[in-house]
Image (cartoon, rainbow, N blue to C red; front, side):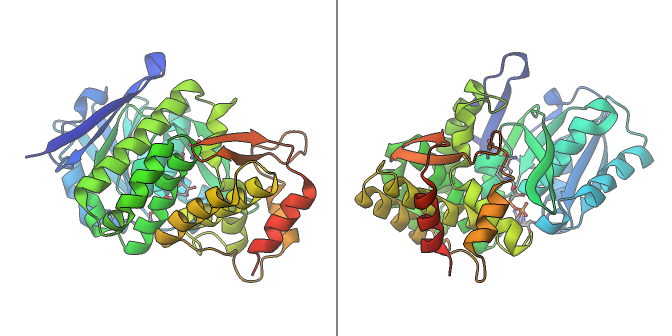
Amino acid sequence: MYKVLKELKVDLGERSYPIIIGTGLLGEYDLTPWVSGGQVMIVTNETVAPLYLEKAKGCFPGKAVDVVALPDGEEYKNWQTLNLIFDGLLENRHTRHTTIAALGGGVVGDMAGFAAACYQRGVPFVQMPTTLLSQVDSSVGGKTGINHPLGKNMVGAFHQPQAVLIDTDTLMTLPPREVTAGLAEVIKYGLIRDKSMLGWLERHIDSLRGLDTVALGEAIYRSCLCKAEVVSLDEKEGGIRAILNLGHTFGHAIETFAGYGHWLHGEAVGTGMMMAADLSVREELISPADKARADELIRRAGLPEKAPAGMSEADFMSLMAVDKKNVDGQLRLVLLRELGDAWVTASAKPENIRATLQAFIS
Ligand code: NAD
Ligand code: GLY
């Protein structure tokens, strides 16, 4: 029997939706109240399908369910793979009343969501995230898309899901490196908006790495609460939502430089957050002691502390120049004003940015 641990809502008026967090949900929890038509297309990948596909089908009793299983990996988050979803939808005669269900990590979620945003000019979708990173971040908030060889997540759409179903049992099969990558985004919420969460994380980081179910449930709930609040305030990133990108400007540059799939997204964000904290000290916003506290937590999560070998200051500058936050060619970065408070600024001094890059290139 399933157990719902927490339920919360992303408040977006008529596009509001629930986030249901619990155990034993896959296969047991009935998602059909959020499926308006008779058809469902589950989009998953070749790794997740053998683990959870049959269970996931059980969430759609009475519906005609088809499946597209994509190749696994960030390097497949592109047009060619996206087209496999459209192939599956058309070959199986899915109409504009179909619902797409994303079963997998953030790569599957971003691509399935983007397919839902585009197919027949937009169909509904539900998120069934199975990695820590996707459960605390990517399944919530409606950012969908694919990568371009010249930049991460450069092609996409805002398209909110109908519901997010988070079954924490799925984390028990997640490789340790992926757990660590997910922890980067959990730490992010503490750094940008919830200082009390930092203290909680300092006490529970080892339990989280050890897949303690109670600690995981709490971390997922607190993260989703934070993300849901920010998204409700600023759905399309006109302002405050950009703080969710702490460490991402540096991190996206690392991911693109390393080649998609070589560094995990969360790993790059972990190093990127250390870089953002370093720059925040150089800008005299936070103290060296605050930076040391952030660094220590990121380190204890097991995240990398240096940029990839061979990545130069010029590589960073050229890749950061295509960041989506930039306005009129001006680099905008998320910095910390204090632990638990972040904002976006274009005013970081070029010499400080260069010094931070130099401190992290290896
Ligand atoms: P991922 O989707 O690549 O999943 C990581 C790996 O774990 C994959 O090999 C996957 O097949 C496997 N996997 C998934 N669930 C599993 C399970 N339960 N057991 C065993 N293996 C499992 O990576 P991710 O970290 O989930 O997501 C990263 C992606 O999310 C990036 O593309 C990033 O850009 C995107 N993202 C999007 C948002 C957003 O708001 N849309 C936010 C953050 C990140
Ligand atoms: N992960 C950034 C965002 O959802 O806005």
